[in-house]
Image (cartoon, rainbow, N blue to C red; front, side, top):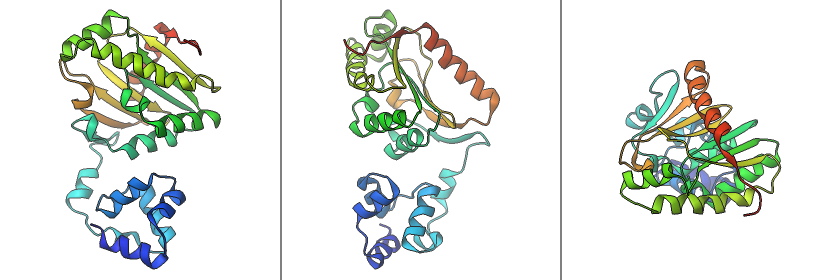
Length: 245
């Protein structure tokens, strides 16, 4: 528990909901901070400013946690052993920071499609002029069926891809949102903006949620070109989805 942060909130007479509204995050995120989770730098600075406190006084633990957040290299900012370990606020920050483009290349991406908050965020960014392109696996394709067999879930993979399409399709009425279905063999799923890339590797027989994922700074032109090219090729070969089924 972060006692210093709780004390600062009490002194400022602010609730979790007040802080969440001010910073544009979910109240659950604020509760996690109060429980001891360390916010990302921009949230730490904004919260310290809101509370008129010194960030170092609010977050004193710095050894193991800071070490864990140290970039793996100049370009790979963070690595997670499994996709399910990525906090929801990381996905939120990724998409919310987009000013030009958002790209999603997956077989289903149901963990995003089934999140009403994320869908609302994608809609909001599109209405701000951000190009949103979503590539989902064709539930009728042999590729998706084969992936289901490899993971040992059979037709469930096709069902997940179809369910994700139905959920994402609600965004098609928004200008700037495009959804296509593909039959590409994916070696990784991609989540990108003009600033960052999240690359979720696909290991044979292992669900994407249990496979490694890393965050890349797109200033590395070599890595950026590789994954952007991969996304573009899949997009070019994919089939546009009509607004109505």
